[in-house]
Length: 137
Image (cartoon, rainbow, N blue to C red; front, top):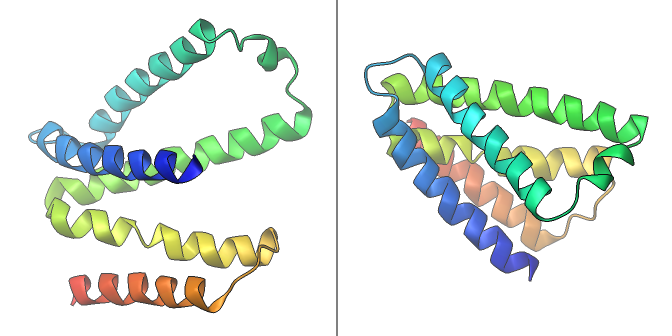
């Protein structure tokens, strides 16, 4: 099932890029990020409330909170830089370069999470990196 969720994530990420490019027209990336963040905030808390998962909030450990806060800060910075790139760049180039995050995830998951790295994964990462380099040049 995780593969279907990942495909849906990719589809909605693509829609995000297209819609964001249109939405950022004439405004700063910071303003666009702030508006989008409010929408995501309400949507996420609405899902938690309506799915009956509020009790999990009280069960968060200090480690959960620390790493979720750090993840939130990283997400915020990612969005700010993404919208800054969309302000002046073509979405068809910004989005694929942004997907270099896949390569960074592979490297960081190997270093910090000790996740296995097989030849297929390495080859896929190299192809993603090569594609981004082609787009930049």
